[in-house]
Length: 154
Image (spheres, rainbow, N blue to C red):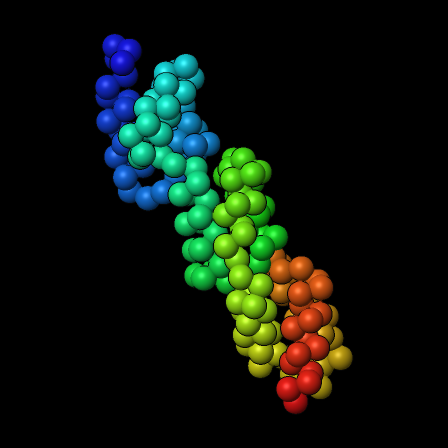
């Protein structure tokens, strides 16, 4: 290990131990602390060797938490992974964990909740529900399919 790296490494280990972080987040934090870029890259490599930072583990946890806790759809989760700097193949592999049937149930649940908040005679009910679900990151074909299922239930 290069001399002078130890304090940065220790600080980065604590940072990564608090919660899962993407490689880009770790690099940005190190640079924000004033760590020179070549050192930051070496520290990231050491963190990855010691499994403090693992991009696949981060992506998997990110997908699960955003789908389950934030009720986000695939598109919004994919955009979030891209913002965190997760490489495309790793992001795509993590997104494969999203179950299609589970996503449809999530859409229907959110749809019911949103419909309950809207006046029943509102002419913009459908548009408002669709806009809400698009903002949550669900695709229009999935939203339309859930709407059709909901209509047949009544």
